[in-house]
Length: 492
Image 1 (cartoon, helix red, strand yellow):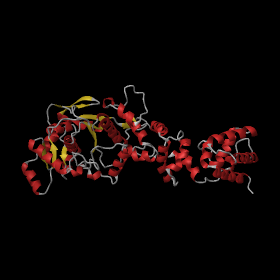
Image 2: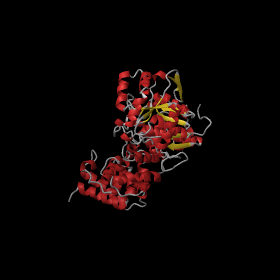
Image 3: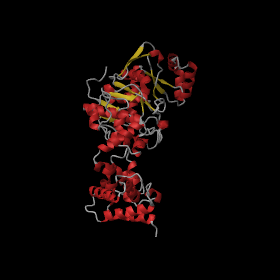
Image 4: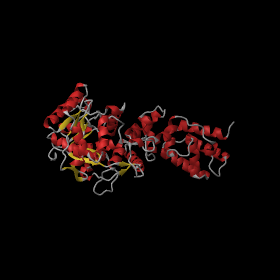
């Protein structure tokens, strides 16, 4: 039985054993989109019971990454809600209460074997015979249990799986799946240190938090029969389960594991943020890795459009290769969709990180010059730097186009200086008209003249559109840089 009649309640439950991965971000996004579309709730729960693998700073990284993406949670840490606390290490008394219920009902049992002993039994019995393994660890004599208790040994608690028949489960993406019970090993619910395992804590939390839909990685699919058995033993409704597809590396041949996280294969949200990606573009990109509308040919979505279009019924089982070329293309599209003042605001941190003391207001006049030219925010630094600091002196060879002599370049610079010195108004349209008229009158190719001026002003062959750049630099700075170029070509 599923929670079909209840409003959508979905959760993302990351573990602070690493930074926010794009696979976790995708699960969060699909939950968030469903909650926003259906008028439900999106819950953040922190599953921090794996103390041995805890990574310092990962919890702040996860929360800040989700906030930056705009995936705000309705219930969770820092927000609260009716089913808290939302951090598993703060819920230990709850887990112990439900462990006692399972022990009392006969669905669970204590074992005093150490991990090393259990590993030895597993090796002796073999992976192919779970029933024998289960019976071995269930059959420790009461006298031996009492002796170990007296010696201070703390028991672990395991769930008692049925030995006969099948556990029939349903995955919303893959359909009905049948597991022979004889193939299922008794899972540990509570470790001897008093901390629950995922197999238990997540099921208790999902039940108590009234989760209707569970979206998680496909690697959890083999555990689904264990989880359904635990849920049923607790007397709760089974949520709808969706096991999301794997992410493959760009070649499509290997899993995109956390170990592949690098500048070449950035898989953590903070890496992509630092590389100049917009949150809107990342969400658009991640959404398409595992979902598509029925037509399958649309690629660009705003966030409101994603909310409107998203349907869990269209989530696909096929693995998705991580296509960084598409990510960059989508980022460029979303950059061009921004209002110029919004783009200016987003560029400020990247300019400041590069050492430029700028404000959004100071950048705003230059934004229209570069908005069509950048695919990520970091590219703006190299295009805008010469507006805020005097660039290195240009190379005389760069100042001199082919088929022109240095003396001819000096003549053109002097003419351009004279043209610009008295030009009114000093705006892009007037500058373009004046310089084109000058080139025609003097018989020089406009491209050659514009290259000379571009290098004189920016010390670069590739720079923002010349006429707008001159207008943004202003008359005084423009003339000063022309004078510097003249000094390079005709030293005193």
